[in-house]
Length: 137
Image (cartoon, rainbow, N blue to C red; front, side, top):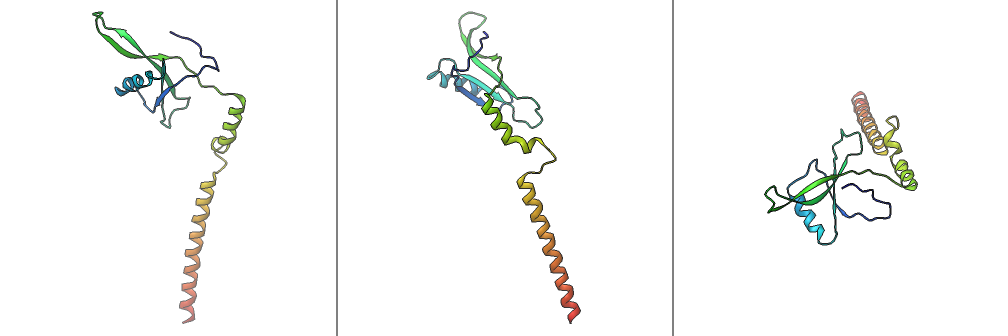
């Protein structure tokens, strides 16, 4: 059951941060089936050590038990890939340009460094002022 989805076809579903399929995911899929024929479940692995695009797609299908009487639902893996139009890629590259270059510091770290520097300067000036007060006496 492998088919390529064209860009104009709308896919509806839900996602989880996984990292694996959970028992309630079939219930969520059933809920979506009220409104969509074949909802897709995507697991997004949000662990920081992932170096590739961390997604897996699944579709819930009904299968007959080995005895042939009961129907059981299971998820099957769907081959998937993440893509973008050129305009989207340019926008994402623009947003991430500072993150990808470790030599460029972010605005928050620059502000943090300036606050630390000013705090140190204030404490040193206070120390000098206390010393001058002692010398004057």
